[in-house]
Length: 318
Picture 1 (cartoon, rainbow, N blue to C red):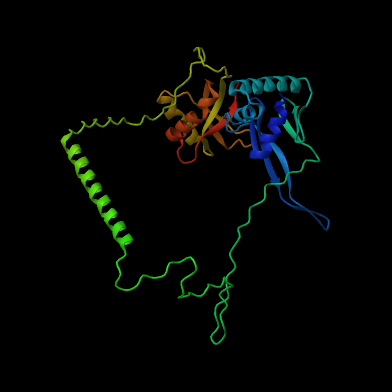
Picture 2 (picture 1 turned 180 degrees about the horizontal axis):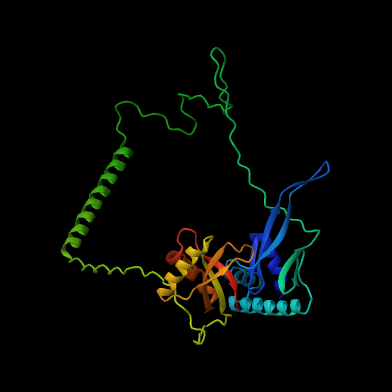
């Protein structure tokens, strides 16, 4: 199974793809630039970011194309990630066909886009608009469009039509039809009255009591014990990462919030930003969590700690 090929196809289809252990590939558009007096059109390049949305979309994509189970596709992705890390640590690049390659520089993983990479986004469908007819002008004939000419009504009976009955004669056929319809109506009324009488004689079935409503439970963040044994029907690699709860530019406010959360029994820590020492991050470590539970956990942390700006994964620790 060529996992690298499916990574490239998923990236071109969705403009992003997350690979556990390597990072998140995103398709970015670069604006048009000038080279002297010549205008270069916009181009696309692939950028690698250390964090991204963790889900099973790539595994589902591979499973659908290969006609295999999702567990086999997840195992193939995990083996690809382990093999790619090994090759990068030994100095070898990891190719993604027609897209680019992963490289490792000074212990950090990067991605280099192929120089000849070209990407054309899907075209926007056009909407057909009906042509507006010209308004009529007074004194000029108005053309409403060509319509098929209607045949003139003829008062003479056709060759297959019977001639009209003479005045004063009795049409017995119509009388017989009217009598038959009247008889059917009487039978129908009798049947309906009898059916309704039988229904009134029967007892109504007792109604089932409405099921008691249960209050919706709100998921609270639960610290995961790294020594606890986790069993799953599908073997999957557990994740450990640090979640960024808040970003502060005032060290005193960051320390005050850190002290408040620690007083509540929460495991948090403060760390200055790598590129700006005047910015401080309030981080919460999460250990040994299933990839399928990551989205629900982040949503719970956002509601409890930072509902306005949200939370995000700062970095992976495993």
